[in-house]
Length: 229
Image 1 (tube, rainbow, N blue to C red):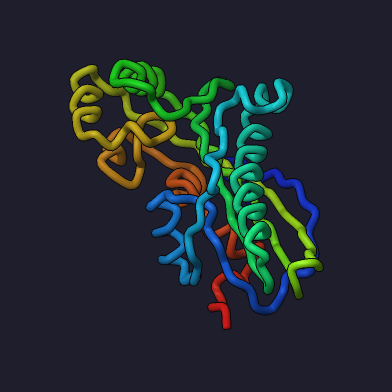
Image 2 (image 1 turned 45 degrees about the vertical axis):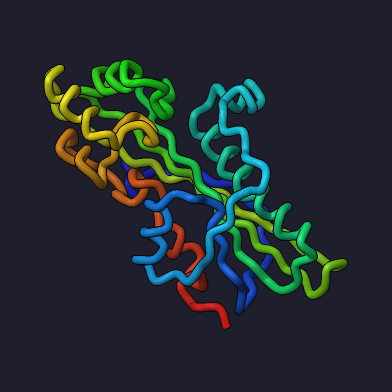
């Protein structure tokens, strides 16, 4: 993997089962589309109790490290769905995928904008600069021959792309914000939408910037693309 597409990972992984149900622990239409285009057969299940995705919910040492914070949030999202699945007396085998995406500039994490002015602040800071987009993926393998015999394993990795913005005028920023696609996006832009016009260069995987590095995911877990039977 190139330096501009760096990866880190933590893991505790059993042998992957031959047949399993794939569950995406995210309601993101972008992640859903990336998996569908990659040929993965899956269903969506989000946590019954919403996961606190704030940095304040993390250990301070973890929250201070963007890559570690991103991985921990991906693990929290996937782990919450694992608990929900097991609480339903699940039997069988499942692969549960959680993900988290962060925009980082000079060590500062840019989350989803809280307001129009917050979005404008973010885009002004990103203008003419190169920032990092980190997407962490946590994949949990669940094996339950019956409800009383459960085996769990997980692997978490992070993929990082470098995104360079054009020099943006205030008018360009205002025009983009009026399009309305900023408010549920980290860093206040969507590279797969109108936000592509703000970007001059992407070094790394575009799918990482969109929100799920499917190339890395399927390289590590090729069986995900095999329909469950």
